[in-house]
Image 1: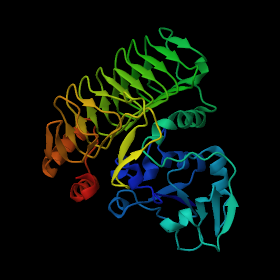
Image 2 (image 1 turned 60 degrees about the vertical axis):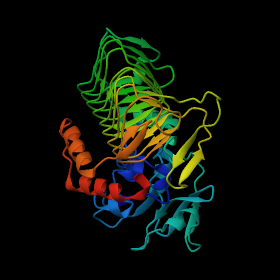
Image 3 (image 1 turned 90 degrees about the vertical axis):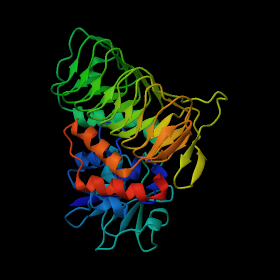
Length: 395
């Protein structure tokens, strides 16, 4: 048996995070969504995504039994309902399809997710549905994702011992250290949720963590960092300064002083020293952000929303990002003043203007950055980057 996680019609809605990955590869908590489905079901997971991403994120090698909306968090009740589906059935909630039991080689089209074919047998799902339809949903739902992943990954297991040099506020059983994790001289507060420290991760002395927080494998929290949950920091990331309710997908750096709040960083990003993100307008009004789907600014319904940054983008020292700034893939932002609230991918500049970032230079930089984490830039990665460079939506 196997599962397909489908982008449905949400790929552009989740710009810029899905420029380089399917929806099911987003990481709102400890695990990527696809990893969560795999761990909870034991089934192989593949992806139905945009054509330019399909080779890098293939469909299952064996015929799939189930096709699931890739934006859904795999909660326990939802997973059980999906596994109960039979061929020709569709799991529904609030008039929208959540998953299909596959019947033959035909697969659901994009329109089927909002209006399934009449011949399908509908099964209503009455449980909680957590869906990531917009980039800011990742930090909004981060706490729930961490809490559920924490239970999944720690049940029946014993944490590595926590040094007595740390101060714990709340329930110490809600702190879990994977093998090789190092935490010394820190303050850990679990009153609002658990704290999970991944394999060989390090939280340096003087750091203050208020859960729910997830620190990924081989990640590093710098001395004196202040991290307010819910916050998920993906593997191999470097984080310092002040962070509040944010998600870093992985392999990215915010290693210096400066504030980042209500934000999402993709992979291979780097925020220069004293980079700051505004997450609240002076008017205390609703934050608007750029949407690739609508081709303009849209309301978020949020009072707090900071930076949404695509993979391989970077900021120079002392960069200031305005509330609700969206940055595409492989942009380089620097200089004084506030840059625009929407910065196209492969742009080089700041408040005084931008020029195009040559694709060959961008690839050379990406290759060097990834080598520092011992990760190769594969031909498939390069093909995705070249495709994005030629696309209007990120140029």
